[in-house]
Length: 224
Image (cartoon, rainbow, N blue to C red):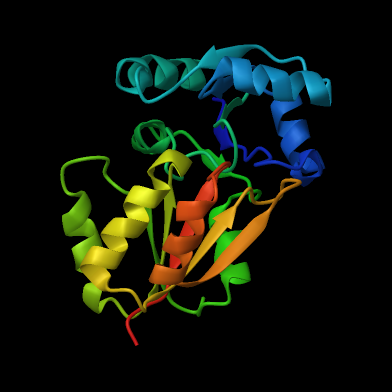
């Protein structure tokens, strides 16, 4: 019986991929990728030649049972990757991992790149206790989620799309006030990696006047 291996891929800097990650990919029978075009470009840069199969949020429910059978029936391992970072963290993977565990298939997860931890430790906020909220809901439940943070004492980390950042900052200001400290981490591990720190009002003023680009991680201080 083969096993399922979750392999992180670089979130920006290609040097972040490990030799172990490349070995796991190269020795696998197939790589399940969130977007085969994105992963294909990475494989071309790294000179990796392994078959790719699409596995994303739109088809994971329909493919899980078949994939579990294929992993179980093959001696060679199956690798799961996402577009960037660690699969299963706000990306497809949970359903397949759970199904493999239920089928008594060995699941292995390699350590590696993720935007969450670098953003947290570089923010300057307490990191001994924190909560991770993934992506905020786009519509229903969005303001309720933010309102839940009003009394939260731990540091809060979440992802947001750059084109929704201004909306998010305005909602945070409206629901939590102006003075809560916040850090916007942008383009982690890439050429234009930046951190914008201040209270919600200050950071909102900055991004109102400056265009928002790149991948965003938001770190919000807990209630003092």
